[in-house]
Image (tube, rainbow over all chains, first blue to last red; front, side):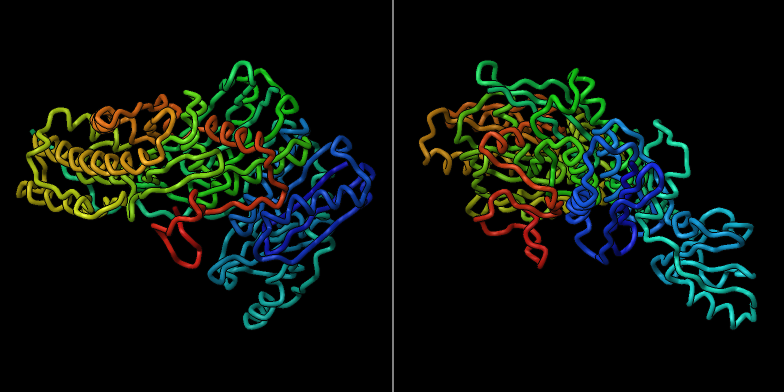
Length: 216
Length: 363
């Protein structure tokens, strides 16, 4: 039984997936603030709704972003704590992978980023092959299906560039449910510790005013 | 009765986990105490960068918990509860610790106990020396500086504290200004050994005012001016001036802390405590000149002086496990909605000293 949860965007979600890939229970709430307070009670509710015990879990799956740095850390820290306590593996799943789970053909997964930028990754032959943080205007859609909240905005931009063939599509699964399914398709790695996918270094400027040279 | 608590700390730049046990027969015992610092990560930035700290805590916390349990020779289920720093501190790090603890708590069914980081420092003398209440506490570290009368594990009376910077922070900034390595406390102290504390006239802020409040921000600026006055034409600083400036700065901090300690001791004496004791904690308490001046104040007031060993003076998780144990013993714990708090004064009755904005007082 895989328990999955995510707080990397302005929401909290949790899902429980059986070994035969049946969704046993799932909850989703839009939430910009208070995810740290809501996440664990929501996990307990999902477990309760499915009539499952902690001992039934074989794996934890967690959304690692890209997204809100603090939000990512909320879920990743909790997942690592749960995995340690239960002695089961934890699998980190990119939200871009989750968005495109169950799709075929060229697909571009997109998520909003601060300062008008977006996170993007292409699948099924679409570019970019690796996840990036980018200005939406630099993205070439080609004939790909675009998934994710910025999809409509990207298509509007692309029309100006006379790109044909691209279309928008909704994600096939809610975040936690998709994360559980992506994890299910991967071989569990007991040594893995889920790690946030930031795609942007920490904002920090080296100290100004160099110290004096010491003489004598 | 025997209680065993896991403690987790991540409120600044140390990721720590520890296991502490207490029994009526044997008292308190630290079974393990693991701390991983982040100095190297922040070295280029002249201070702790919150986002860098939060990222490092997230990667390190579960490893530290594993190490602490292994060091104690216990499994998680052998513990009675999980204590975690839930504030005050850098919120990203506090959140990572709180969420790790919540994950451990939900998965194991063990109770969760949120701990005020300052209570951890303030209750450490009970972990190390079994001090009875009430005792006078000077908490003096990189982030905090306050006088507290510790009446009970959940009752702290603040007599006063810094209205701006903490001394530890001032030591770090001064070290940088003087071209000394970080962390600033030990390097300024070393340089001061070769310097003349009277070489530069520096202010003793707020000594002319009643009460136990302190200020160190102006002292820092005064030192910068004094240094600029001592710089050679090519912008270099003579080693002798580096030492003299260090000694003069340390003397000013020492004088302020000693004079305010004298006042705090007088207020504390009015309680007529059974075992009058002054305890100090925080990294700055490791400074031998400061420590000697505080001990001298205690001696002349006829009060016992105690300072925990350095490893328990600076940030650690044994103090969090212990403070959690004291709370848990009183029948207190938290549920999974426990919040991480960037600001959380120990004495909620006292007027706020710092940051009285909409987010509330820092300390």
